[in-house]
Image (cartoon, rainbow, N blue to C red; front, side, top):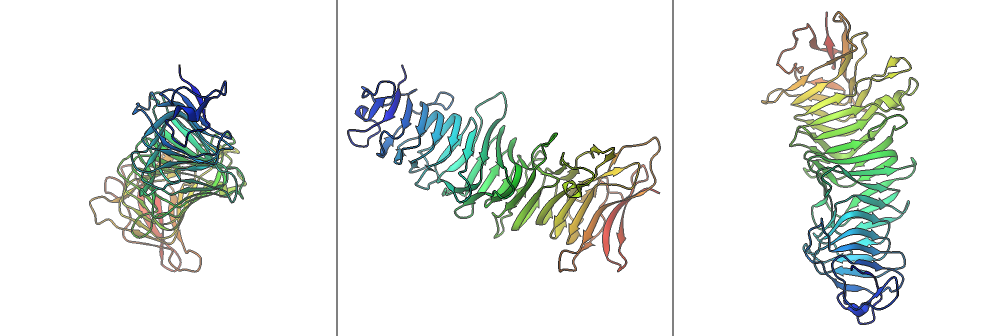
Length: 462
């Protein structure tokens, strides 16, 4: 029968010595060293280090141990000599050490981390979080440190597993691997802070990346600011600023991406048409001094459910970056009815935009000249020389029996503060079929301001 053991060494610090363990239920010294299926606890019974922790090479579906817990009151270090798998892992205090890539830790069911150090020997070892769980930061001025790559995965074939990173403070990713975080298929990492003055920061030692694999999710919800000092490489996943919304589910999140640089984009979206970036109106994605690059997938603007007639700021999604768009779509939510009228939303970007491929898909109102708007503080440079072209494909909302004859402004450039760079350079984009007028008489045109500067792109129907 599996044992429930606590660390209380009397013969050195060796994990595999039976006399260093006691049965929690009786307090009696164990007759046997830890065996597969046992539950292991390190707590205030002893602060002594533990060396040589071993696993049995078990499949994570049938892990080595039922639980592996370092609880408050334990201040020592548990050193893994081999790979170890456990159904439940709790780290409240003390630390584990993973000396190399073979000393990986896999958690099959529940991962809980509120204190202590997750690998105090930075290496390219991995902590695989395969059943979801909770990482809770201790408040402003506190730091949780991981010296391993965090790999979020899923052993559950029936649905998505979620790990929530909550609270204010710093999470320092100190791995020696360039890829500090992997998020796998059918796996969600949700980062939430309540309180606009409560910052949450994911920091890294050196140039590191978060890699979002197909069908993965990285989601920011709540209110407040988050710093992500790692580059994001999205190769089929979903990077979400604001969450899904729903009644009362609006977010006011500012995410500041500070990773990348030196030729590495702070945010790179590529590989798959399913790759997604969602930004809720009222929220901001700020790439601080680094490039935003979209090669495929979609940038989707979701309407904040708290947006009302008197709250125009909640109908604007903000993206601050030097942007390069070579593919993918820019898409808006269907305008919701608020106070009896549709609420049209705006994508506001700050910084120069280079657009050479992909499709911009604004909604236009069949009943008025209202439309979704891409407002650019800077220069929009359009390049149609390559095999992939930049396109506009409007979406007619609230259609009537007869097609409307109106003009809708769908792109506007303005001068950023202190600069005279708000303009459009290059040819007009076309419809996806390569024409500037579709079969229904809708045309793509541009307009100049009073100083003869090309500033606007429009959809027209005479």
